[in-house]
Structure formats: structure tokens, C-alpha cells
Image 1 (tube, rainbow, N blue to C red):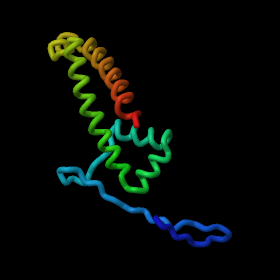
Image 2 (cartoon, one colour):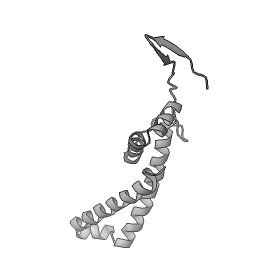
Image 3 (cartoon, helix red, strand yellow):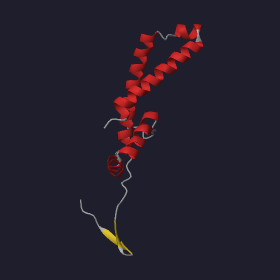
Image 4 (cartoon, rainbow, N blue to C red):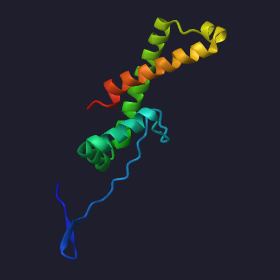
Length: 125
């Protein structure tokens, strides 16, 4: 990689160009948004692994990386939540009989799922 520089006062400033890249998913849609897991991954890289964050940003692969992590995390969260619901007896019948108990159990499951997904996927390199 060869860099060129230009003078600004007493300083040499590298001539860098931003490579604007449009990420397109497999279905051809170019509208992709980061949800909770994707935004948390981006923040994690930005705050704790600045080199990786900057490298992916400059290469134009940050969005696709965060979207891939987001997809993995959402799939894993759905599987774990379904398993925990079955194990804890959280059913539609419980929801109809005692809504507050159902909400309490679902909140507990969602919190546990988030902790697992964060530690296994979002906050791992």
C-alpha cells in the first residue's frame, strides 16, 4: 500500500479516500439496519478494540460485520429463548391464566438470553 501526502503548514497529511461501499444482503435488499445486537457489537469494537473498528471502517466492512454478528445473535437468542420457555413451563395457557406471572417469567428469560448472547457472540473476538 502506497500513500501520498500533501503539505499543510509544517505537517505532511496523508491523502486518504473514503471508500463508500453499499452492503447488500443475499436477497438484494440494500436497506439493512442494525438492531440491538448489531449496535452493541459496533460500540464494543469502537470502545474496546479501536484498531479492529478502524480497520473495518476504512475497508468498508464494518456494517456487514455488524449485520453478520446481529444475525448470529438473533438466531441464537431465539433458540435459547424457546428452550428456556419449554423448560420453565411458559406457555400460552399460562399467559391466558396469569398474565403477570407470564410477564415475570418472560422478562427473566429475556434477561438470561441477553447475558448468554452477549458473552458468547457480541462481546467475543
